[in-house]
Length: 100
Image (cartoon, rainbow, N blue to C red; front, side, top):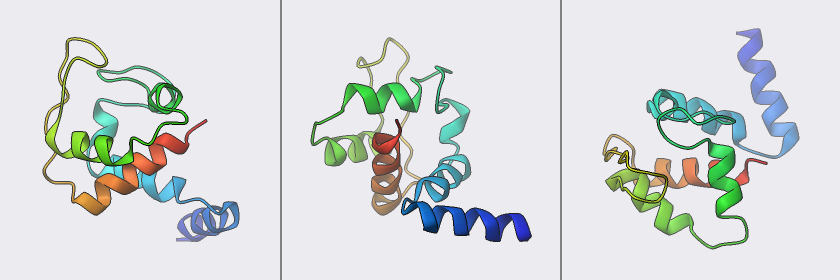
């Protein structure tokens, strides 16, 4: 309980929902195929953020999180993830794009 409170306080002080979004990514099984700093099945989230730096792609990637896609990061397709709501997908994309 103390650890959760400390994590929430750190996130609030940092002014970013990054920790909450990482927890959401784990809860929605995104971290099975992705990691923050290394390629797993899909690309590292840091590489995604770097690729799309300065581009307005939140809406495009939000759709891709829900519907899946292929060809951008190699031959392995990303399956659709319909257990993620539109709002959750947008939160996840915003978080991924904020990773440095």
